[in-house]
Image 1 (cartoon, helix red, strand yellow):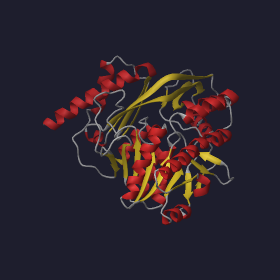
Image 2 (tube, rainbow, N blue to C red; image 1 turned 90 degrees about the vertical axis):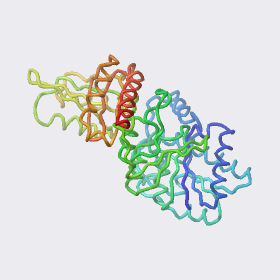
Image 3 (spheres, helix red, strand yellow; image 1 turned 180 degrees about the vertical axis):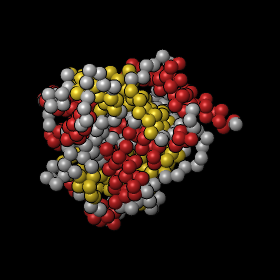
Image 4 (cartoon, one colour; image 1 turned 30 degrees about the vertical axis):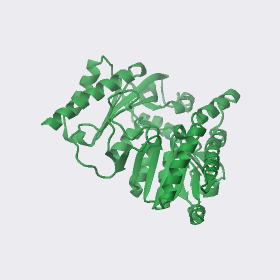
Length: 408
C-alpha cells in the first residue's frame, strides 16, 4: 500500500513525541508500505513566529508573513528525518519547492493548483520514507505561500490524491471526530464514521479536527480518509461518502470563536447596495458567512455579516475607505461573538430539530443575534462568553433525544 500520514503540531511538539511519531512511521514502513508523511510545525511554533512578527511590524504584509511561517514546517521535517535516520530508518525531508506544490497567488490563504509527484515517486523507489512540509506551496512568482491555519491537512489529502494513495491518515491529539469538543463537553462521543458533507460542515464551522478544504479535496477525489490519535492505537473515525444509518438527530456540535461581526449601518435602501458591499469583500479576499439585512427605515437599512477575525482589519479598512460610495452612515464591528452550530444529515427529515436547538438556547438563557441554516446545519451567532455553556446544553439536548430515538 501507499500510505500518506499527517501529524499535527502537538504530535511532534518535543523530542520525545518526535521519536514516538518516528517509530510509528517506521512501523508502517516495516509492514511493507510506501510511506509519505506530512508534518505541521512543532507545538506552538507558528504562534511564536506570529508573535515575533508582531514585535517587529504588527501590520506586516501577508507575503512576508508567509516567508516567515513556512520555516516552522521545514524545521519539523528535518528533525523528523534526523530521528528516523537515528533509529536506523531511511528518510528524506522535502519542502514545497522541492516537491513542486504549485498554488494560487493568495498569500496566507492559497489553494493548491497542482502537485508534481515525480520527486516523491523517485524517493519512494529508493526505499526512502518521504517527509513533506505541510501548510505551504509556491506560487507562479516563485514566492512561498501558506494554505491557512490547519492547511497541513489539505497538503496531506492533496498529496494522497495526486499519488493515488490507498489511504490518508490524519493523526492528531484526539482519537477521532467527536460529537463535540471533548475538552468542553466531557461526555462527547467519538464517531466511528462520518460523511464527507457532515465533516465539511463541522470543519468549516469551527471543529478543529480537520481543515475544511482537506475534506473538500477528499470528497472530490474520493480519498479514503481516517482521523486518529498519534498517542494511542485507537481505530479513529473514517470520513467517507456514505455511512451506516445511525439513529441520531445530529452528528456534531461545533463552536467557532475566531469570528467578528461587522455592521454596515444606515445604507440607502435601494437595489445594488448589498452587491457593492459583498463585491468589495470579495475583492479583498474576505470570506463572509452569516448575513442579516434589516427592514428599511427612513429609506435606509442595516446590513450585518460575520467574517474571520484575521480578516477584520482588512475588511474595516476597505469599508471605511468606501463608506461614502456605499452610502453608509456608520461602520461598526464586534469581536466578542462566536458561532455555535449543529450538523447532521438526518436534520432535513426531522422537523423538530430547530425547535430543540432553540429550546436548548432558551433554557441556557443565551440570546441569539443571527441565524443561518441549510439542509444539514443550523448556525447561530451568540456572545463569546456564552459559547461553552451553550455548547454543553445543546449537546446534552440532542444526546438525550438520540438515546430516546434508539429506544423507540
